[in-house]
Image 1 (cartoon, one colour):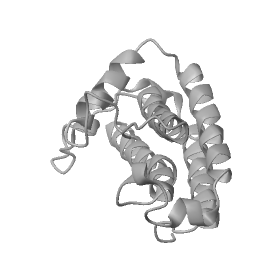
Image 2 (cartoon, helix red, strand yellow; image 1 turned 180 degrees about the vertical axis):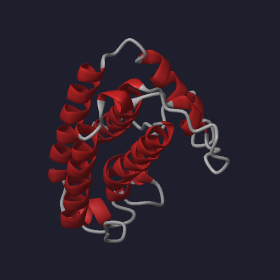
Image 3 (cartoon, one colour; image 1 turned 135 degrees about the vertical axis):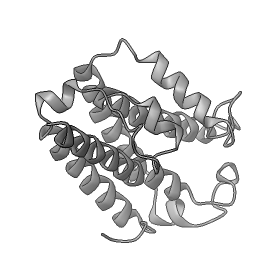
Image 4 (spheres, helix red, strand yellow; image 1 turned 180 degrees about the horizontal axis):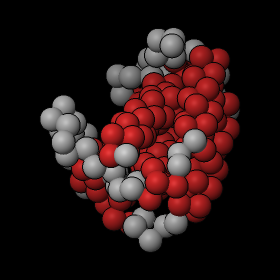
Length: 182
């Protein structure tokens, strides 16, 4: 496991590798694991809201898809000169949990197959967008005033490689829960 990517090459490699690992993990889910709703209530360490929010694989994929959309619309808007924050109003970095719940509610009728296709396409779209930037544009601070004190590349890392690790951790915990019920 390498550290957090700081170059375009590492970003693409980490995003691609974690996407593939997530895909393999998803393919390995049994019918029982797919049909059993997530329940992490017995684990005192899993206090964050997302442990209660997401009930199944579809919810995880939709969450990843919606964060891809945040990045895509944020970059495109700012490239056109529309000064837009990453987290859309009325939300901010303190209230984005409510935004995540909104994403969850919005997709309760989305099928698992639709969610898989949406996630697959948005992943590819994020990588295509990353490819349009140079290494310097992605990982030099101060390149774009709308990025703030971070680098553009760090946002790409967050919505791909890092978020895929989060998803895998959650799916592995669910598999473990299902195995202990057997």
